[in-house]
Length: 332
Ligand SMILES: NC(=O)c1ccc[n+]([C@@H]2O[C@H](COP(=O)([O-])OP(=O)(O)OC[C@H]3O[C@@H](n4cnc5c(N)ncnc54)[C@H](O)[C@@H]3O)[C@@H](O)[C@H]2O)c1
Ligand SMILES: O=c1ccn([C@@H]2O[C@H](COP(=O)(O)OP(=O)(O)O[C@H]3O[C@H](CO)[C@@H](O)[C@H](O)[C@H]3O)[C@@H](O)[C@H]2O)c(=O)[nH]1
Image (cartoon, rainbow, N blue to C red; front, top):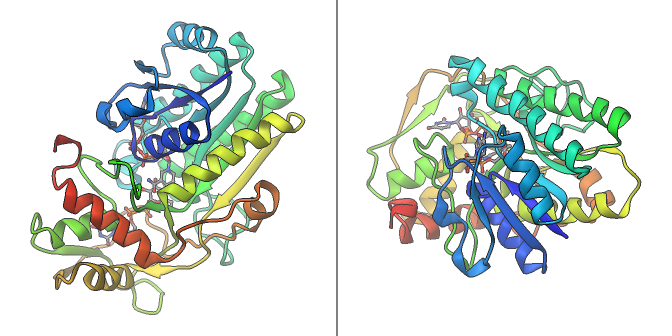
């Protein structure tokens, strides 16, 4: 048996591949390398790699059969909130149509378990904080809407084909692996923590704070940052959960339950790096909700998930170590 990881050359995917391999799983990776890096699938992990698009149904069926895959962990997607507002059709094509094609291949190959990268962006403007899985979902941007559409597809695919799914709604992934040379390298980078650290490295002159007039204590947006290795461990647990339970449709929030404003993140980065990190206030970014904080008690109770690196300082420190050692990311 092996686990197919789509998007396994990406940021969270590559950490999950490492986690699954360290648990003794056989893993196979499919990635079209549009935003991922071949080098992020470390040679030492001995993982078969296919440069292939999830929409290539025939090749996916062949891979599922050749490697006796029994579960899919599905990261492959476009995932930038701002870009999705500017180019929504790209998101409906790659995320929704792409996942639909992947599911067709899985059903034809009789592989009926999927762990899926969903997002806090499905909730939109939450009515209460922290957010629970059953709270109202009205995405504010096309990206979140594509992820919610996929979750809905899972429900009907369960009823029709017996597909078992676990949608993991991550809050903000950050940090890097503590021992292996993998970390965050998005191009262009749009995420707060790596951009702040690029300022500390002298690669940018200042961090732009997107809006300081939100209804939060210091006026900047609040997010729940979760270590990428803690996301990886949740995927391993979710694969095993689907394997050991009756077919079902599941959703789990993954976050630490602590909200940090953009300014608080910058302050933590100043402390960790010892750099002054100048900031400038810029206009709000389209599609950004003011606050997203997780109630992840269901993942703790049902999956037995326990984040190992919950402190923001540790998350930023691990990211800083990766960026210091790899200032040009996977080009180094
Ligand atoms: N980074 C976050 O904070 C965050 C938060 C919530 C959810 N997510 C979700 O987690 C997943 C991974 O995010 P990430 O930050 O690692 O992104 P990433 O861009 O680093 O990884 C995505 C990977 O998928 C590959 N890919 C994209 N479309 C593909 C296709 N059609 N066929 C094959 N491969 C394809 C890319 O080349 C890349 O390697 C995404 O689905 C994203 O929506 C990320
Ligand atoms: O240069 C920057 C970059 C970001 N921000 C702000 O920092 C916060 C975090 O932004 P970012 O790191 O880009 O993450 P999000 O937009 O919150 O989205 C991430 O987290 C979501 C879940 O919460 C996931 O769905 C997305 O895939 C993932 O990119 C937001 O308020 C941004 O407006 C800035 O002020 N300046």
